[in-house]
Image (cartoon, rainbow, N blue to C red; front, side):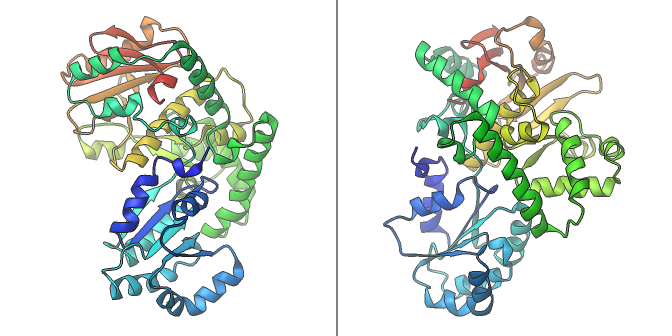
Length: 419
């Protein structure tokens, strides 16, 4: 697969002709550097600087202002820019000096919050921010048309959702192929490295090495983490709780760490694009801030590697894969749409909640790994949509086709939904 076909490509191309600075963030090995090299091939002249190279790093520290001025008519690409945040001051001076020049800088970074903080301080109003995650299911299939999920996001009414789902169909051979590919994504994740690494053990070994890289390299860029053993204990205990309400105090007791350390470690995971936070949905935003959250991994293969579980019968992993696919779509389309979960005081719960693009429709989702649809699988969805006119329920599973279960609840295979 040509990596330039990533779904984010068109938006980055547009940014390079409309914005002075473009920043592309995302986890290590998600394909940022390769995407950019393909993106700019045979177009505007570029200058590429890898800041992981100590010689390049030192020279730019000493001569960055003069270097940027000398190549002011090119697109300057700074890879892993968060390693030398002082360069952002030179970038600010440069883009303010030549405000009419578009596409002056393309910044790549694998450290979300650190990079973002410096950008807010130095480049406010001058930069367009994008996030590239591991391959989505649609990208793995090399699909260029809108997925069924994106079609649902663009609907305006319950009737339109019903029509969209009723008319959508995958031929048998495609359906079988897509379900097998989704199972593969659920097992090993979507890092670009797996386009060529097909052997299961080779993939598992790569994920182990990836984990060691962020333990030994990326974390040390964030903080002087002298005792990696305590972080590895946290990592295991945290991963076991993925998809459940995260009780910080309970997690701290199990790890033998205080609450502040647990929160700091979770922050590192979020900064490195390893895990993301799902907050409970409430109409009252203040309530949303006071309830316990859930956490999920951006890539299920990495989660499985930490837990040492590559079995094909755990619903926890399937739920993570489905929700991560939704997050990838939200990041890619630039809507800044939020993905919540919903839970009442009596324990009625929906695995996910989001709205259509215009905000008029609410979708509640339940995720089950099973190929069979059971009536008890939608009992919570029924309660959520009972008194809400503009709401629908989706039971996302591994069934062999889309089926309408009630007036406003549908069963949809994950492989169909994201293809």
